[in-house]
Length: 137
Image 1 (cartoon, rainbow, N blue to C red):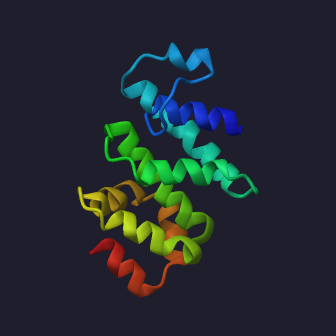
Image 2 (image 1 turned 30 degrees about the vertical axis):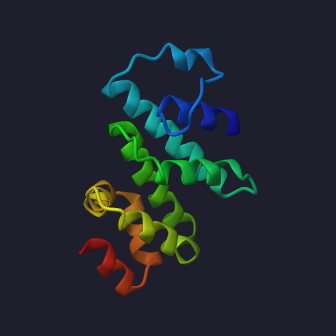
């Protein structure tokens, strides 16, 4: 799982390098491929965050610090921030808040991507009223 998450992160341009999985190298660039890769990446990230693995934390740090972006990498960064809040909002709030304050409409994108998802409910349950106000205003 860790290797696949790493390869998907390379495909999304979150991490530098060449994916070990040659099937990923054959995926065409495009919306459909990016959506599929992001969905798989997000599920793996959530699964590995509940383990002792350091890999998801390294990938999240890269995603949150990735200014080169591109649409898929930008969406991955928001998903990474969302995953941190779902797994342990109290521990990760300051890190996510620092990311959201970086600008580039990050807060708006975060709110838009989280609306009407299971993440929205989890985040609302985990954050204080003050943190929620900061997030959505």
